Length: 446
Image 1 (tube, rainbow, N blue to C red):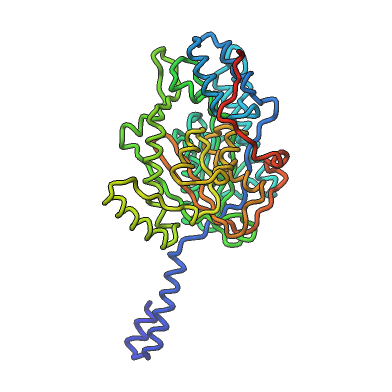
Image 2 (cartoon, rainbow, N blue to C red):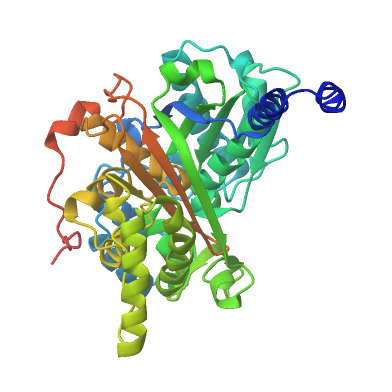
């Protein structure tokens, strides 16, 4: 800057002054530009076959629970029959014991198994030292021990003492994308860094042993799972990366009491703890989806589609008809919807005018692995990779809902054609997918 002032005061030519200004502008752009954030790789946890819980086995375990009456048993049976879940989903061994073993040691064993295995697979696959991790983010909604889960991973893998670690709890099923947003912000501040995200949910903690139907739903839908995700803001990592992060959009409606209470950890009339999922959840999720997509649309939709959206909505208001939904298929080739349940996937399919193929990754993930909470979007992306559908330039939308109430979305662009690695948890049975998932199955005798 002093040199430019001297140049001007000494009567430098107009061309020299302009050149100096351009240099300063270029320096400013370099300093202030946001770093490009890459997804290098990720792995998902697949429980051993010994953890598999066929529908009939789960129903038998429920039947043998002395705390339940026949109405509660019948209700869970009806939910399971219409859940789209297969006989291949898994739960921790502690939940199959009679009487049920619900304790701190059991939940610690569960989380250590899922988290340690996921991280070990990811580090081994990428031949990466744990000490090379600069940022560690863990998320588990209902299990928040002391020391934290992030501290547990640092201890297990002997990570550096100056690692930036964060442990997110109570954030619900959308915490996986929330963690991506946090990692994105940190990687932009600490450029050239490497971030590890580890997402899971602890079933033992929130397995409900009462009779409240809104709380019994979690037992029917949630299953064992986890994912470890490696992100970087180092430009040298582009050649090894799979995806580039384009956008993260977060929406939160906790200020609204109805939205705040629709997924809520509480105690029932018999003082038994559980997570209540009310009937309002689908309508609240629909409202939150509209808010999130309203923010996301201008960032991703082609200008022609945005203009059509404005014109059609003006017409709809005059005719007092339902509003026009933009065609998000003009912005994305793939969709990874949180596998919150059959109703969530069907609502997304209808609201976004998606095809059966668009929702296939999420529907198959729900069928094979169940609702694995914040890690479910990574199982859906892993399915796409196993099917060899991720091609260079493809854009994929990850979207998830969570307690609070929240709707978070992340947009990725594929950097290269992605071939599935041997560690892909879908690979050894991917040829049999997609499978026909009936709307209802019969698991009760008679």
